[in-house]
Length: 257
Image (cartoon, rainbow, N blue to C red; front, side, top):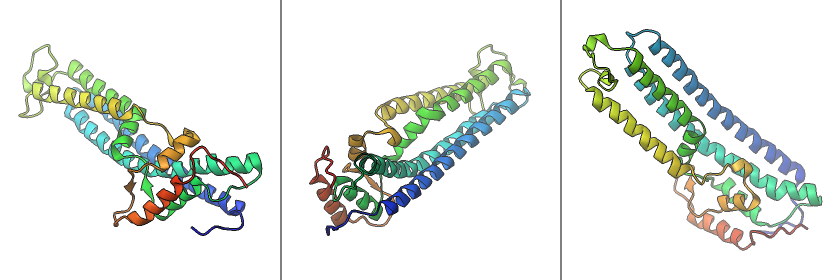
């Protein structure tokens, strides 16, 4: 990379920072919107189903499927937000800190090569499964728990007279059409156990990009396994070049001119 005799423009860099912050904020709002949809839908359906014993409990099961769709959409949006937030955090830890503390701008440092590489060929910093587990841990475990409790409450207080079930157990009441109650009941419980296990396994080591340390941010942006955002063919030569150039600069070095 050709060396520049002058430091980069602080004014231009601040505008870049503001643009990235605006992009991250916009995607964060999109994530919150889908969460609000899921919460509103779950609350409205629960109230509707419990309001009358003629309303089928199957509506709550369909709401669970709809909530899964909201979760998938939100996890996809979260990957984009995580990328913008990682760039913002990199500028904060390696650019703004130097400007504020030393009143100077560093040249040809590790963070410059990392962010230039990502500007030219953006790559996600987290997998889809990691973001899925993160949204489950943050919001959707509570939401799915609410739907499960409402479903169990529906089976407990409303007995489906059209099925002729007089057993005190709620398991036979979970029947849907020709599908027997035990099959429905235990399938739902198994799905919930699998979801809980997935959340625990995939979400135990996750850290938010907004609060990462400088070393954590560098490690995240320089990870060797990153999925390309676009579907076009990757440019391994370009990525390898910037990766090697970034590795030439020690992680803990901060040389300001």
